[in-house]
Image (cartoon, rainbow, N blue to C red):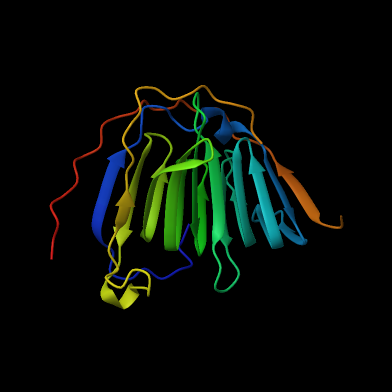
Length: 220
């Protein structure tokens, strides 16, 4: 799946682990329900193109954007590319398993890979971890990739050519809250439009949380 947003100089990689509780493991095996103003389906290519106020629900996953292209491979895995309206951002949210926490983020483009169990935020990317309704950790950069299979994410900065007024240096920014001893148990979650339900893939084993490398020293 190719990025629809051109990458600038991707530098200053950052990787660190979240607290040891993965995102909902059952989500990847749930059907993908999509609502939009219009749908164009190509049975030969197994591709669906949704346009106009697209809303996606897949288990605890919620995705919103202006357009979404979904492709399904022969094994039943789904690959989605969501784009936002000009000047806006597409949105992603997913509950974390066993705790009252959520991962959410925005980007001009969001790519969801059901087979690799990854989501990528591209262009003015932001990602947050919420404890209930309170933002705990947050980070921003040019590209953020969240790997649900090992509960890690990477953040990439951009060169000055890709800097924004709010981030003139184009550098990765992160705010990490102190970890509590334990998290609270999970609580209850939360006309004329095209809709579709895509079947889930076969269940796959989930990887255990592993430690991520330490932050690299700051470069100039």
